[in-house]
Amino acid sequence: MNISNALSLFRKCTGHRSSVNTSVHCSAKQARAMFSLAYGLWKYIFNKTEFHVLILGVDKAGKTTLLEKIKSTYLKGEGLTPDRIVPTVGLNIGRIEDANAKLVFWDLGGQVGLRTIWEKYYQEAHAIIYVIDAAAASSFEDAKSALEKVLRHEDLKGAPLLIFANKQDLAGVITDEELARYLHLKELDERPYMFQAVSAYDGRGIKSGIDWVVEQMERSKRTEVLRARAGITGQI
Picture 1 (cartoon, rainbow, N blue to C red):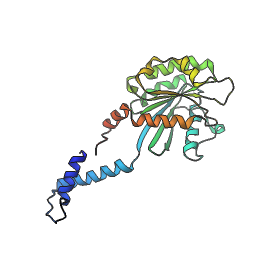
Picture 2: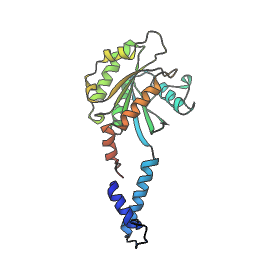
Picture 3: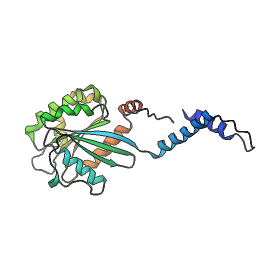
Picture 4: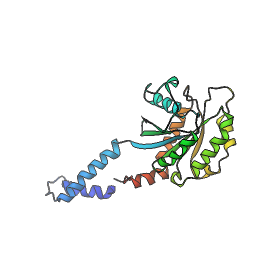
């Protein structure tokens, strides 16, 4: 129901046409529609949009440490410290809220044998965070190959991509600009993307990256497609 029709129904069911008392003619069907309208309006105003964000990357890129740092940044220290983190076998889930949205992160294991499960989460993902160990040049080719495969998948078409050049706290690390030149990904032409230098250890760069990905998801055509699939529209 659009705004114009909603207002028309509201006037009819409340007699809100003038200051003079009038008879109210509103059927049970119209009353139910009014209730549905009121509930939809309440959800539209007060419910934050929930986005699903994939955290991908090859093993030892620092994905889980990054997720825990995101949690501690937004949830006032609730994330695990690096010494308590173990490699992911399967899936880790993290949830945060910012001023405008709820974010659900799916952190998936990066070992070769575990990458086959990644695509099971593609259809419902609003965006991708791809983590690369920018201090481990020996892993770059594997990271590039895995990312290219991700971006070719039809189920992730149009999904915003945030590439984190991680471990900026270490010596010998390359910058996000150098990583972008190395990867030279042709598939990036079809989606919004950003390279961001970060450290999952000390937190640098993380909030800027998360702010960017939230902004992109909010205006992404992919988000519109996922909302339509779930029966949620921008109209009331």
